[in-house]
Image 1 (tube, rainbow over the protein chains, first blue to last red):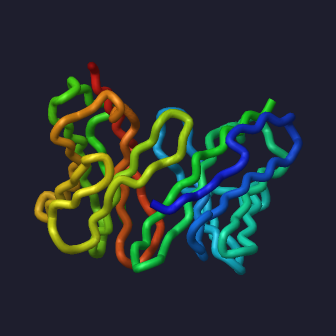
Image 2 (image 1 turned 90 degrees about the vertical axis):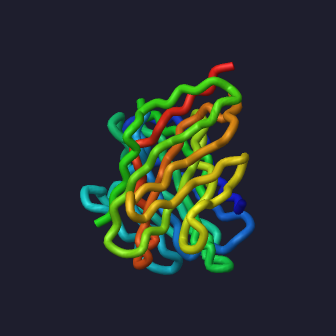
Length: 117
Length: 113
């Protein structure tokens, strides 16, 4: 299957700092990417849909000013957690939609474990 | 609205025995169904999908799933489980009008040697 790279895999930061997470589709172009948050032993919660060249669409209850999403190219979307606090500690996962050959399959990155001290 | 139910939090089987992970769905239009597997501290790996066509879909690592429209189910199966199949399995659905997926709560599979 297609490859999606997510970086960093783990980050520890102090409360009040900002953290940027990158999501790259390595072997296909992705006009649409998604950002999820996963709590321990829980399902994935969709945070936002990232669209290349336009503003992201946020799910209800997700603060767009806190979770900044930029999708400046067909292979890269970034999520910036601004002024992070301990309650933002979580596992963040991105996915990229592969529309090639009408597959329309989301391929996922390996995730980023964020710990805010 | 769309939703997925995975009724079992955990499934335990012995290596070599058949493995089944259950999934039922609800969607307003035609269902697009997916199974993903997640290993600890990793992202999700795509296993298989159903869009149209044969009700029995074959995927990666020897897994298959059967689409049953009347029962609105899409159970994941493997004829002979391996210890390495131990992981967290997610069923997901979307309808034809939106690319957003709705995931089930996940089923933890443990295959004992």
